[in-house]
Length: 116
Image (cartoon, rainbow, N blue to C red; front, side, top):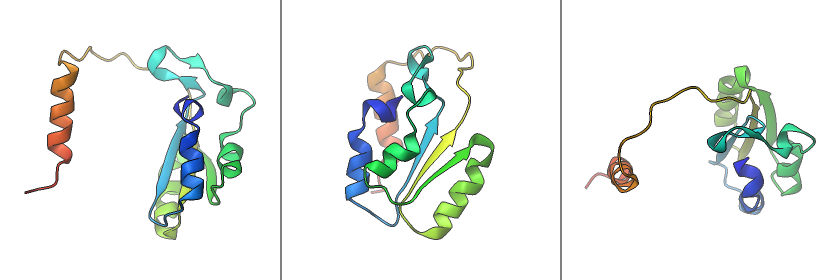
């Protein structure tokens, strides 16, 4: 769902090719974070064709079980690649995160910060 609601991402990628860039789209055909409502990608909208129409030249579609191999191939190719990995929709039960969002943000920023 996120790719469809942020379509500018694909046209930005298609117009700014970088050989060291791989976009992995996990296409479960739903908006998983808001209750698994179906998206149009789960119906008639083909994300591979959408990416190609946005100027992305090396677009590959695979099934979830083949994602690791497809990603390895993309890494070895050293070409800008968009991978659309088709998978089943659904959420597993997870516990509620008890931390405030600001604390989560600070933890994340500290982890990804470059060493001094």
